[in-house]
Image (cartoon, rainbow, N blue to C red; front, side, top):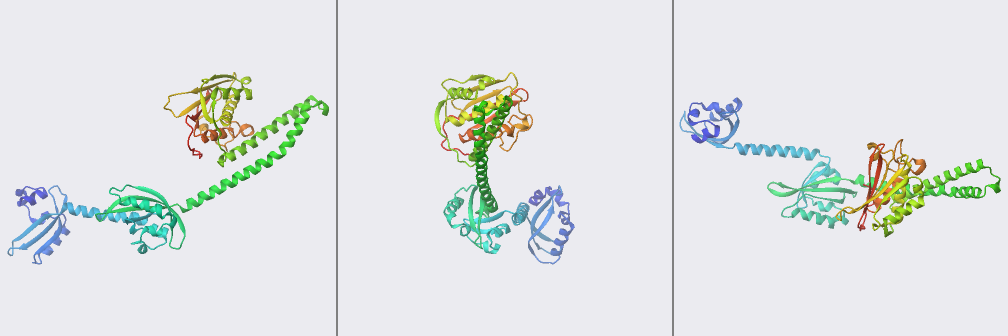
Length: 455
């Protein structure tokens, strides 16, 4: 009839000129049909595949009965869309099982908190066999002290419109071992019912590694403090004797040449003392033991004091553009130290005639930071060096804007950490052979809490 013709893309007249066997998509399927037809029995719901006018396979369900020896009445039901959907579902289910069973990440499908399916990775994580996991409440494996927090986390799975979620918990394996894992929950539908797919990422080893790193860092800080103390102790009498000799060289019968040699020795010992102090300062900063003594102070007065105390006006031409009424709310001593470091650094690497510009930028009231820039006319910094200049372990290669380790090797690292303690940062702009600009960004508002970890 017309419905069969339309289903296969023919007109009724075209279909009427064909023989029935031409409708099947392959000889094997055709042979199977005629074997059933030849049995002489009436057939119900025989699934087979026709071919359309354009050559595409088309699944149908046939039922037939004989009217006489030569005439057969056959009804044709279109099941093509249903068949394709079933095959896709079977294919998806197979692929999903392959993915989950071969995944190194633990996966469970849950209804509320009851486990409906668990993959081998979760079985290995929990210590329970797959058949033991099925039907088990995942809450039973959560460490007792974490269960209240887990109940809150899992309670969101039953929301009218659940959303993907993430949290970290401790679990107790079958043999009593405590393991840590990050859970990722994703709402899914299983057998037309709401369910959850929970990925369990084991990070037990990472947590143990992190604890070992923290212990190692603490030991390193202790060693650094001990080394600094041991190095600094013998320097004190050396400095004392050198100063005694230099204060009254004539009474000790020293020649001018000997005085010059001792003067160089005194300067070298003082530089060594500064390096030791910087090592100790970095150790304290990395150990997060340094607090901030906040006050409101004039930025212009602070800059003038740093220039005067360091004698920098004699070493370079310094232009200051800072409003007289500009104030910072910060630790004045530490900000002064940072400015001193950047001024010394800029002057050391400037080209004659040496020039330094100190400029503040008030900017919009909406901006959260004050900005104080120190610009020089020095050798500049290459793009590759920009990522290295603040690293405390870097010894500052040739042409680097950072001082070498024999001078003030750790100073830029200390400056960065001091500003970071305030919740700010230091940015750098530089052009090789033109100069560099170091800009201190200090929050206008004193932060309630500062994350002291470097970013």
